[in-house]
Length: 386
Ligand code: F3S
Image (cartoon, rainbow, N blue to C red; front, side, top):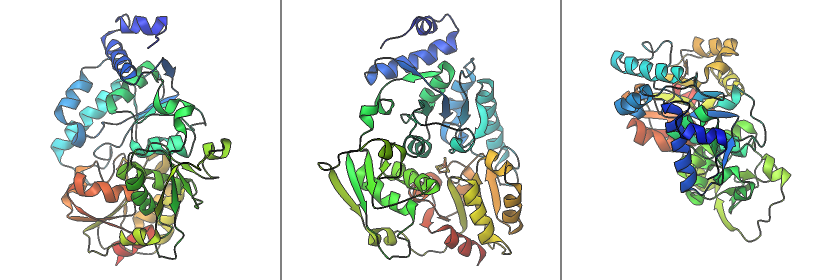
């Protein structure tokens, strides 16, 4: 892989041991994937932030590093809200360890916005190269925004943040972004036929790691977020196109005549919606947008929750919408920042959880050890308040 003179000096250790290690990670990755060069990035999003997922060894590794991020970089959700963790039910020992992880990232110059929706906090433009690691954020950046990022691991996203570059391979190259399979979404009359997380949950299983182009649907941006998150969870989708909707599907004319075709039927979508009593309700996977908070505030206005109801969102989004947060919290529901229903140990304490997300439906059983039920946001509010 070609390195310029500055990169060579970093690799030789002239700018410190941590930068040298980070460059070694990028060079190793580039060589494995046959990258011809490094490409500058405009931002990074670093996973491996919850102590629940990285544990003691991950923390020691982070504490051994000494450098600063060269580009704007944020963290993925951590295992607890940075403020109010005690009220959220987090144990002291976990909170102490999690705070050490956060401090290690702060020293590395990573902004402590802990979210899988960094695109709500900083504008990301079409064609920008990024190094993001959380799968739903990657799917959204590539698909809804037309930016370019591979799905980075925690260490490679951190390395890219510190060096300010990433290996130029995979989804950074336009030719690798063409659709490989057509997904037809059956237009059914079922009550949940328009549930984008559920459609993505089924579609992801069909397409696996291919790049799909979906036809016959007109999702808005929040719906693209839900769709992509679910396809990234049940498949390995890092980029998808929606005919006439997503930016690259409008810029390029794709020839889909020779591609495999799969169908998502309304019956399959409906079959995901099994009825089950639950101990808690959690929405905001991926983290809620301002519009989603507004919808929840309207649904909850004048109601009282009868079981724990958690709504996850980025701190930047909640701080910009205090009125919505107070309407929601007057109902007894809690708006929680910095963490989520999957990476926080708090959610491990429930045996069954209702979610509105196709991604959470896939992850909650394995990551929280709980049964998961999916519903619309309206159904989630009905279950939490009745
Ligand atoms: Fe985000 Fe957590 Fe879901 S990181 S996409 S809210 S599993």
